Amino acid sequence: MLNYIRAEAYKLLHRPYTYIALGVLLALEALYASMFAFHNSHSLVTPFGAAVVTLVEMGTIGFCICLLIGDIVFAGQYKNSTLKNEVSFGLSRAQIYLGKLIAQTLLSIAYLVVMMAFFIALCAVCLPMEAGTFYSAPEALVIVGYFLAAGLPLWVGAQAALCMCLFLVNGEMASSFFYVGIVFVLEAIFDVAGLLAGGPVGDVLLTICRYFPRNMLDGAKAVVGDWMYLGKAWLVGAFWVVVCTAIGLYGFRKKEIK
Image (cartoon, rainbow, N blue to C red):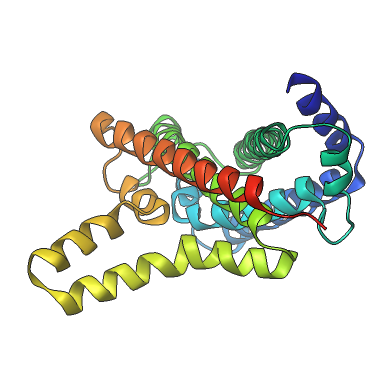
């Protein structure tokens, strides 16, 4: 398993796609930060704290970046017929599945660290630190730190859902739609069904809806500093990882690879 993970890491470190995608994301962050700098020179001043704290409104982007990470790691193996080569080589399907999932998770975390460090450092250089009536720099960093701590397990849970989709569904477009359906659409279905059903059944459906990753992440913005909610976010993320991995691994073991 360790050798397979090393091989996956080696491929990722030597793929231009890995660096091009990260470069595009950093360029978009730089553009976003430059908007605050431009605004400061032509209108009211937006300090460091006010700019950095806007990160808590962008949690949904993390679920979208999971799609990018999955594409980088999985690399169209069904389309290119390379997955059957790994199976023929003698690797167990559990090794292949878990190795890909771990590689996706590690790359996601690396992207998160680099992107957050880059944006915060850029804001610190380009924007004034005086808070005025806005959040001070320490206050903003605490808010963002809590949000990222709550978001990390939820994004990893979504990454596990994507890994399941990539292994079970042939075709990158179809697996992407399947992932979007699970992470974004399914919660809306539970929400509408709960409102329409009413009574105990409706209450159960609405409760389930609250524990979808995106809803949990949205709730973190309003409870900064609540350690109980943070623990709940980690439990929800772990639940999604375990369930999606179990389903994906079972389906992949039963699947015929052509």
